[in-house]
Length: 230
Image 1 (spheres, rainbow, N blue to C red):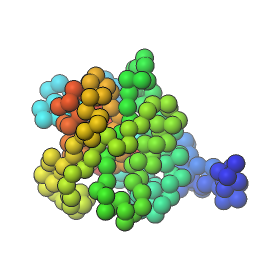
Image 2: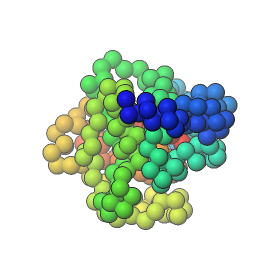
Image 3: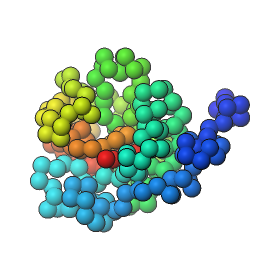
Image 4: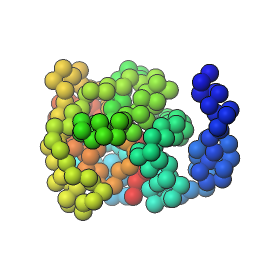
């Protein structure tokens, strides 16, 4: 009821066309340049976004679903407002498109085999911002598509520099060995399929480091579900 009244008094407006009720309407999204079904490593066509076998050297994830390009001004503005300006309602719209992308390209029989997680934020950074935007998005997706969410599954164990300020190689080195599993979750990982929800992927260093930890503990498959990429 609160959400209904909020939308009634101050309705959402599309960042692109100002149409009411969504921050990004389906029509405007359809007009954007979105990602085709490609291998994220080599950028060549692949089946359902699968990473080619020949591209798997030191790559631990299996698929990356990406909604759109970060270079699109509307997408980048939505992400920045969600990330830095507490506009958490944006996540309520983005989950719809991310879920459609997932269901269109992932063939599954039992959602119990799937687990949603998100990149953890360093404690003091989260305290400063008051929330983890990827966690907000992951919670909404988990609730709406009925796949369980593990919040404290992955821990960040060292402070890292801001990725956006670093070169590609510096980003890879920056996150090396910076994640670990929570001790009480290690026994529950065998043969599970993990969906890592995040806002932006560029050098794939974050998702690959998390995937490395999961695969070393016998996770069956890792899927990235991402709003945008460079």
